[in-house]
Length: 261
Image (cartoon, rainbow, N blue to C red; front, side, top):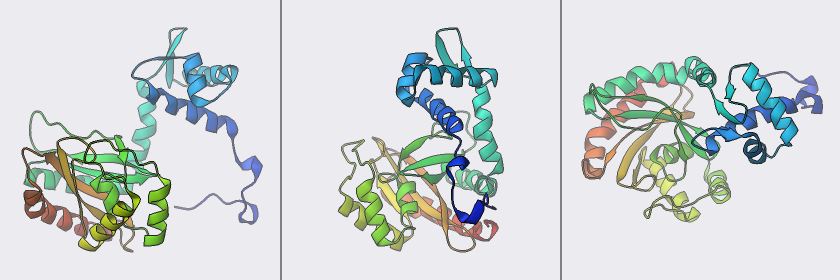
């Protein structure tokens, strides 16, 4: 994708639109609460003056992204157009969705596709077996990269020195009793996973849940995503994941390599 050209390759202060940055930051603050938020709460969460937050919210309301009863503010479904624009324009999703559907059908388990976003992973697509009811990770769901199989599969793309720096710098809080947080142990684990070509995480990201993932590479061998399958620990063993799920994931990831530019 072509980059925006700047004079002499340098970023100028005038290139940065502060009002847009503030508006996007304010939109993100709605995720801090399960329901509507007050103007004061939003301004405080976004670290903005109350008058500034009010003007931004008024603009977002005019655009249809926010609704208000005069006191409380809430996002509208129109916000989903921002996410759908990404999903429709993502080549990775377009290429991988048929694969996710196929391996989910063959394994009779949910398959998911994730990408790195800073120190987190974001799930951007999923495939489900032909069942009336199925539970799994929703699109847009975020988890820390260090304790997830998709995250470790993608973190393996970094050279050892850079990976070590990233692991030390990122926030590593235990989310289950099994979560590994020691940066040196994580470094050794991710290096080993890179050599094996897959990552298997057992109850580190979510209690009673284990998953296995492989990196998705584009034509030039660059890791651009990870595809995984997971299940409740009482239903699928680690051995079954390696024997039954791993071949499907590996074959699938390899089959799309030349389609990803």
